[in-house]
Length: 129
Image 1: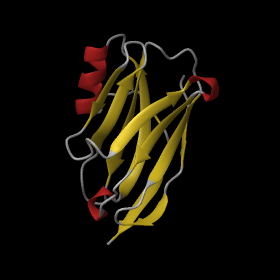
Image 2: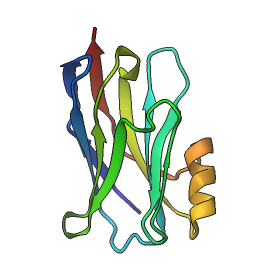
Image 3: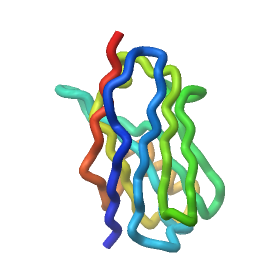
């Protein structure tokens, strides 16, 4: 059973930056897909970004491409989401997720569908204009 713990959320002004962290309990996770999702009040949960460390694949939603960057610190079992040029529409609860998928293609599908078994508790990001 994989446990995920997010941190790093907060309140910033538009144009600012935040870095979210997600500590992943299970290692090695080279066959896992690791992802970030967000959900604003009254809206559906959307995939933000995902990575399959085993193949070096990384996926981003169109709304964050070029502004958000995923990275992985193997020594700390931690995935990071660096968020730059934040906009008010980025305001949401952010969740990290993980599942053993076995391929980059399956990771992409999970990123688009939200089909992960393991989820963190979420961290709030608020961007003011």
